[in-house]
Image (tube, rainbow, N blue to C red; front, side, top):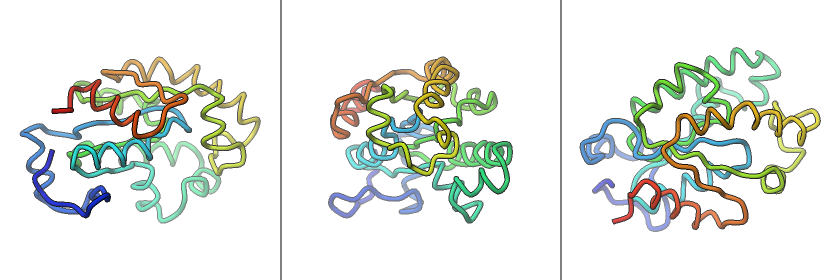
Length: 196
């Protein structure tokens, strides 16, 4: 997507160059936005997709941690979920306004109505994943605040509430079950017709 050079095998970061923001083929906003539940592979696929497209990758969870100066589990436990969601909403707004590459959102970002409205018209892809694959990827002891108690049941409940929202904001749905991250990145690019 961008004409700037990058180190071989390394996607550029969101701050790699100012030119990247200006030459996203005349489009405003991200080239791709990835949404989905914990364990869908948004971070891994996002970085691979950015590399494939020759653009930058940005993760709003990382933005939140930078803004707050602490890891997400600590934000939840010390300040509560409403505080985290307010930070998340701001991080998504900033990223959509500033970033022209591949953007991945935290699993709960779509819960916010203003965020869903912001995503309308953007190239959003829902990375879908089944419970078994999600558990294999995130494990049951990973520091994910919303999955801390009875993670399998909680993950099912989260997906029941969020699946319609992921689908609502997305142009395409790509399953990540039993697929290598590189294959998922290719499927996303093909679903959005980004492959030349």
